[in-house]
Length: 407
Image 1 (cartoon, rainbow, N blue to C red):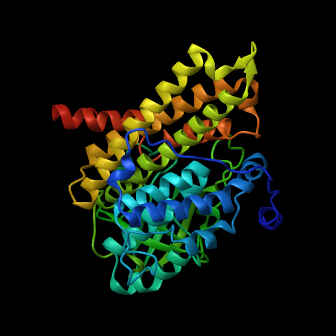
Image 2: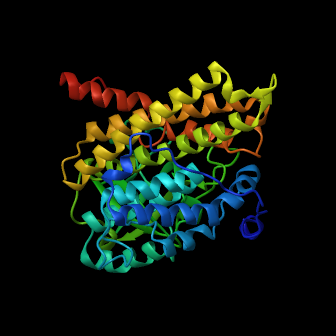
């Protein structure tokens, strides 16, 4: 593990210039404020400077560039919607947050996972459901990147059905005794704190803040991934872990707690996936204008133009969906079903665009010289996590018919 961390600090940097330009066919920028545009540009510059030069090497070597955590904190990527009293870079609206996730995922889905887990799944529940003492203790350090957090809901045998979780705790007086395991947890092996959802002896779900170093708590890394290779993923294992009662989130019980967290994370994904789609489209467009076959650029052939036109159409529809959802989120009106629609649609169009872009690049599309295959592999995870593609369809189906199809 130590060798891997040292290697992550010395990843090979490419000299290839990041020339990305985002498409805006319907002039959606006209809907954005000067502050939102400035935040997007700041994050775009950050990605070009800190992520693009190292991300291909990190993905090829399956290394999490751990130094990015502090850098994310410095640029304000962690919990930007958390009030400024807990986060000096906070107090932003949800459209600004979405734009930040879009730019980070344009760089890499794994990097966006690091940021959105920290903000939506760790900082948000501590702020929304925690005590004032918990907010003061954890939020500033999470915001700065001094601490890294993770979110423990999914279990080895309970993914789409979190209510069936078996992780549990027992009241032991001054503390509770936590037992169980969580699976597929982003950030876990390096996390300083974990927001863990577990059942009490009465069968009620509660959130607990578990700290690295608590006896009986371990977070082994999951190896041999073909997706999110620049992200760090692991398990959370609890064997008679003594968790002080002051680490229990006091202001929420039941499954609605983690579900509200997931709504925030899924909202960020709806924007983030667009970033991956835009990067694939922009790469394919540039390549199509440079690649000569039959004495002219392949961008001059009808089938290539069809692919590019359909990519741009789907990106534009996704941008409108995300922007309107952001307006609703700012107004406190965005529903779970609306968020599910945006997450499901935008990830689907992103993965389809990645596949079409790969075809335009031909054999070059599978190499690390271009980002297409990395995005494609990453999106195979994004289409599954934070609610699978099919589960989001059923959430919409339930909203339409009033009949839950989960059981």
